[in-house]
Length: 86
Figure (cartoon, rainbow, N blue to C red):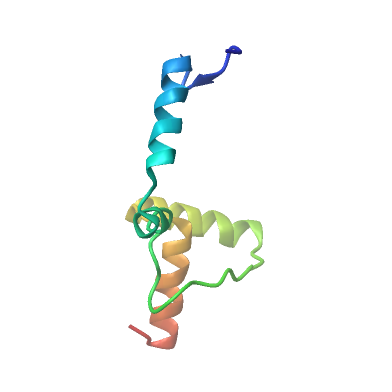
């Protein structure tokens, strides 16, 4: 086996065989589909690019950090408040 690692730990032939055995046994596809980001609202979300000048972006970052939320969540909350959508 080559010098492959996962999280700095060497990958062994036994690990590879275990993964192959697991794959051959099959996976619960529905469980696999639940990985990733949670849904936002009703159905899939859409990415909406927004341009901001440096001062506005800096203020957004500072407020999001202060509120312990992501920048995206801060923007969503602001749009909800502005549009009065729950």
